[in-house]
Image 1 (cartoon, rainbow, N blue to C red):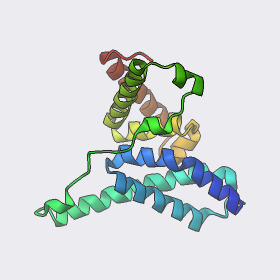
Image 2 (tube, rainbow, N blue to C red):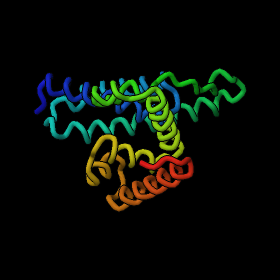
Image 3 (cartoon, rainbow, N blue to C red):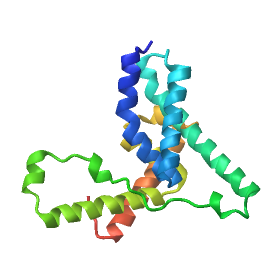
Length: 188
């Protein structure tokens, strides 16, 4: 059974990654923030009494379901209000910067030239674009496995599919990202 501190620490540890994952899916920062907050509240309300080791998988499943619910609501709104452009606008400006949340070792940053820093920024931006361009299920599997560091079984349970499907989605995502980044002259 998770204590309040364990639950709080868990939620703090996943908030940024969950937000970024949601932004990749919905392409709207405000909606992504709402989805993450709703997911966190549902986890705390309904599953706060579960053991701490079960929280990551439960949270990923709740986050996926809240994201799907958001898409369903958007689809319903578009169907009901197709004449009103207010309901179809999506904010593409995106003020979220991955580099604000990725920390390089201090000695690397101090010795890094402006040219290197600019190139690193460009590479991160291009990687983000390519991840966002992946098909939804591939992106979801890729982010859970490599961003959230979940194992295949946890990812399959969170996505509601077989372990083989997770492996296939991840493999296709890695190949697509690798090909797209190589085409841009980026080798990692």
